[in-house]
Amino acid sequence: MNDRHGIIDSILGAFAPIHPDGFKFVAGAALATLILFALAPPLGWLAAVATAYCAYFFRDPERVTPQRPGLVVSAADGKIVGIARAVPPRELQLGNSPLTRVSVFLSIFDVHVVRAPAGGRIVTSAYAPGAFLNAERDKASEENERHALVVETERGEKTGLVLIAGLIARRIVTFAGEGASVARGQRIGLIRFGSRVDVYLPDGAGVLAEIGQTAIGAETVLAEFPRDEKARALSSVIGSGLAEE
Image (tube, rainbow, N blue to C red):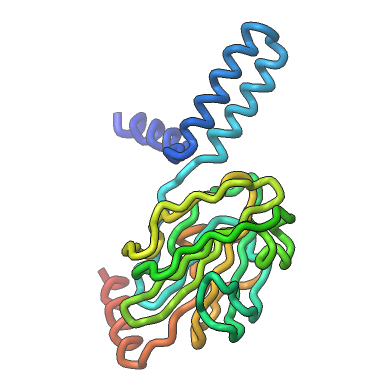
């Protein structure tokens, strides 16, 4: 009984739930599939494949976010295509000096739910119209349509987050606005069909990721805020105690 239940759980666990924002797209594709099966079965099979992909695209798996204080996690799934110093876009209101920017490119096969890289309060939320260039190019950060957010922690560290539309992506949706409090790893947005997410780190943050690395949203650690030695020692003691348990 337990073995059978375990097998069923394993099978069901392989299927991630669909994000509510994707329900209308999946339902529309499913309806079109039924109509095409009735009118032209070969086209119906193609539509069925498209419907399955639509459900796959809007999947929203649960994630386990690291809880150690001071960490900055990836806001999205995808490939880290850039780690460089860059002047943040003006809508972030983070000044004109270069900051470390970590860029993650999302292919059409990646999870497209975007999550908060750090916990705190959203102090800036701004939409900027633009082009729809290939999101893998550096120019996309400055020229593409985007939505910018800034999360400020209790200690005053500000992390910039920019959701960027791509060649195929034409719609950016955000779930949290200015003034909202968010937890690290919390769902805060979604970009439909291929895109890029840039995270701008405050000065002093230590980068812990590498170009070419595959990032998992809410789980992969990108950087760590500077912390005093006392806080680090306390975190080490707590971590050791948990390890012993």
